[in-house]
Length: 344
Image 1 (cartoon, rainbow, N blue to C red):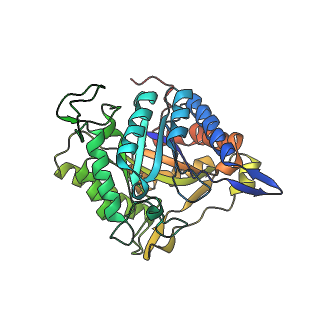
Image 2: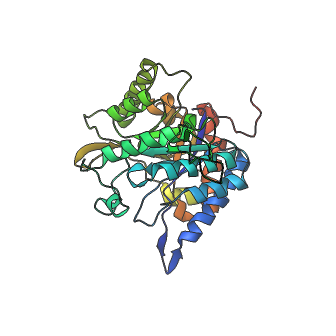
Image 3: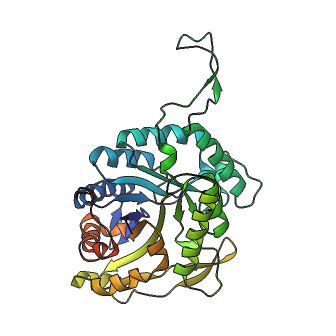
């Protein structure tokens, strides 16, 4: 593990006891938390994207705000549902955030997970033949990649008073190298191999649509191996990045024990999108026990980036303390060093 960050689901709404976390509260707290993590030398702040839900649905303004208030931390998504996206508008937004951040965008996209509405992307104006919209997502993704690669997509108007000329015009702004900062979220081996062939990074999902009795981390490590093999077979150069996400809570204080003591559980089997799936376990233990457990997690060993899913509803102070506990007591034993320490 070379890097770690947080993956926020960004839930807001009633908290109980008459308390309310608004959408504005959620975003402003996310900015404050990212600033605190940047000061700690944490590598990334990533956000889940869900439409028609009390979560982040349009993350680019939030990422731009975080980028403008920080200097080192990577800002990203895990993941944007491409079924809902205008790929050219997304290309413009992504390039803008990448330029504002100085190349710190980690844009995770995918077909998307099940939503709280039926075929919500049709309400956005997009129709798919596939019942889950996989064809639509990949069609949009293909055009998005062409756009960020700088391909000319619209014919110039030679009579225009705003530049004119001839030939094909690319989308602007253009951010060189953005392609290397795009990730595909994959929940099975086939989609991971496809991402490898496409030459983008891999965000391995919090669940895998496979349930053959083997542990989640073993299934996920095999998916990662298949992705890297596919990358190499396609002839791509360089080393692709791979992330996995886990719920990990170092039990350091009495408050930690109150919230998460006894929460450690095994892998879970469930049905999602009509397929039996394996969900990863929650890790909650004293730091020395966590180190031993995480070093034994095959997928964490195989990935370069670990995303900690955080209970964002508990506020900035609580989550920053959880992150600091992990950074202080656990992450160094897994091979991590903060971004505040100059690389040799």
